[in-house]
View 1 (tube, rainbow, N blue to C red):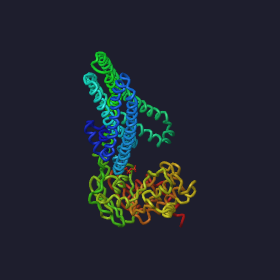
View 2 (view 1 turned 120 degrees about the vertical axis):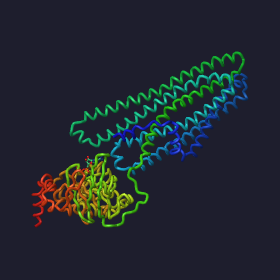
View 3 (view 1 turned 180 degrees about the vertical axis):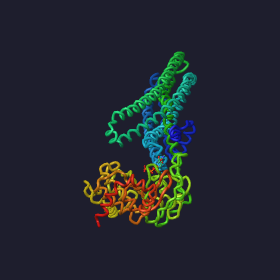
View 4 (view 1 turned 90 degrees about the vertical axis):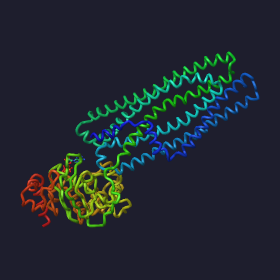
Length: 602
Ligand code: ATP
């Protein structure tokens, strides 16, 4: 767990480091578009400054000198300036939206592509909800940081530069006095930014837990109801919602704090300018036009200044998101295709484990030197107590995990040296937990065999004893089965999973028999389907049924991560040791039924 906590609570990287990475990895492809946007922003800033500057001729020539000729000229100039400002603003907004949205799309694709290649252990340690919130909340906040930073520095900063220039041109002494107070605002604003980032990190953490909990309770809604846990779950959700509320409220308060600081300082600057500037006009030290132009520039500069002050907060929020995204992107998959990986030939599919040791958690071995063979085309059954390591053995063959030591080979080739494509094409896993997607029956059967024809799909379904029930569904093969196949019965789900493996037609079959008892008819159909699936394939099966162990070519008894006995059912019964004991515990009650079933055809 400590490892996860480190991942989820990343070290606090400096703004500069994060910004550099953000620019290098996310922004660089769009430099051209951004330059174009900055040009538009510069035009806009120029137009803003010009509109303030125009106040001088308006006051001096129109109001004081009452010059009618210049009236139209000034009016036209004001209109042209505002039109130019509007057009430039539109263009920069469109360009920046384009860049921001492309950044979201690119990073969503990049993150998914990265996660799709992560190993099973990675997903075991991270709740789905948290991973999902990286795609939604974090990437969006990162985009906001990028576009606000660019717009802020481009549009607002350039506008301020233009307006300040106007102020200095009109009355440099007044400008110096007005700007003496503004730098005072910088210190508290930077402090607020830091607090903002800390609050955001906590909010994100809660958000991830919120998504995870929602997902788990909706997925497990039947258990929630069956155990009357609605009240408990409501309490848990309410707890998280309350914490989220507190955090967002705190972040809103911090953000809002920037406003009174800027408001007061702005008021102070304007008051000083009015008093001092006014007295200079009265003393004839400057003309009224210059004064009005100055004060217009100061007032126009006020909004962009306020935005710039808030920018740090948004930026810090976005950087928290960026950091969480980068932290995920930086985790390298533990299981990778070897650089010199070779494809598995079209061999018969003989599987061998040689002195395999493996631990999920260091110091707690799950397999302690397992050596076993599954000859090509034969069926080998694994039996043993719960937690003995049977599923672990199955997981190592398609490299869901890598062995600690020893080797797993298919047709003499170490699975660690095979290309993923050929390894996964050679193995089919049918586990107890059947995964069906909320898609049509056809799409679920053809999962992993894109482009399979309808004939191939129906053929697979027929062999899996599923064709008839599929035709009885409301829309046959086009029926959507619901999340995890909720609209089907347990036996139907199993037969769809078998049909999927049938269509995949892999030479090596890894089978974890379902323990959940189906009714006799359903059970018989699933058994028949499995029998068909196993025909001619190398099958390693975790056996839960007597018929499977009796029919297996070889049985391995697994206990505490070791093979403790091997042989056929008859041989092992004759030894009267571990298997015989297990048989009496696990399978004996099925024996009369099996005997009757075997006797019936004769
Ligand atoms: P069952 O018949 O109950 O399914 P099994 O023989 O298949 O049991 P495995 O699932 O292989 O047993 O588990 C072997 C050991 O590894 C157990 O002690 C189990 O607690 C542990 N284990 C299994 N999966 C993980 C995991 N993802 N992380 C940590 N430990 C695990």
